[in-house]
Image (cartoon, rainbow, N blue to C red):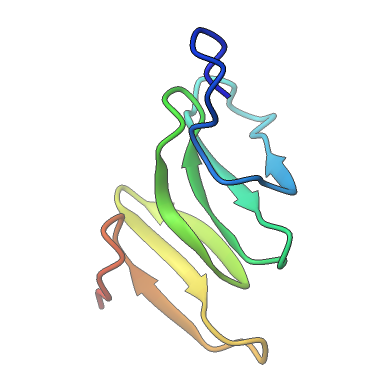
Length: 85
């Protein structure tokens, strides 16, 4: 929620996984109530990777390893959701 306007900047989220190892990092994993995950910029509220994956993990600059099926199929995507590699 934007504390200045009182408006929500994201859909309702079940959990935001904060990065306790690097408090300067603005990208964090979030989970929705349907248990899917994505990436969120906590400084501005923008969703970088939509919550449509069973697991998400940043593995480099603009490179994410995502689990697309419940049985563990993984793909690599960039922050625009485009499949890479």
